Amino acid sequence: MDKVCAVFGGSRGIGKAVAQLMAQKGYRLAIVARNLEVAKATASELGGIHLAFRCNIAKEGDVHSTFEEMEKHLGPVNFLVNAAGINRDSLLVRTKTEDMLSQLHTNLLGTMLTCRAAMRTMIQQGGSIVNVGSIIGLKGNVGQAAYSATKGGLIGFSRSLAKEVARKKIRVNVVAPGCATHGDETRQHSL
Image 1 (cartoon, rainbow, N blue to C red):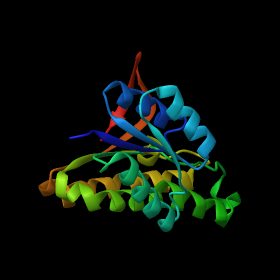
Image 2: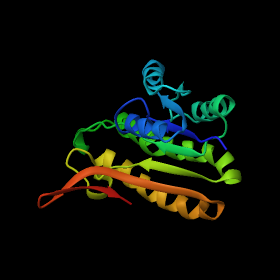
Image 3: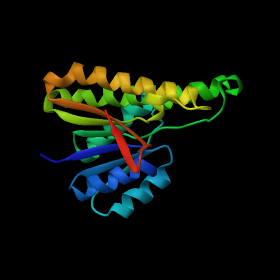
Image 4: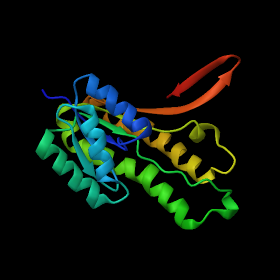
């Protein structure tokens, strides 16, 4: 069976690092981002047969059509990475409602939509999902109340989804990158 991995938010940052690792492990990749040109550049850098797709994960229609295109050109997605996210730092009293909504729609709703779309084929064949959260979702931070809420919600969503689909041989994990110092030691948090 072909190993196909879709990395939403795969054109830069953590998503790009994950894409590089998955390419080394032999996966055929769908690099998905809002900016198609940047996604194409990342796919090209990886070498091999990797494709780029444009998608606004906050829009259900975009997510649905992106999954159709990925499956048409690469085959069924059996590994999904949700690394797309945005942050609009501001004290809550100064945060615009549209900034709250854009973070909720991208960081939480978007991940829910991509997971639901992936379930169509994963329920039949199994698969793995990794959602990228943040340590801020666990501990909070001044000026990041809305961002923290979205990442905290992502943790709860991922835990619940893992319980829903475990019997179908689908693994769901959430990682919470961020540094927490404890003495001289720096650690990553994984839930």
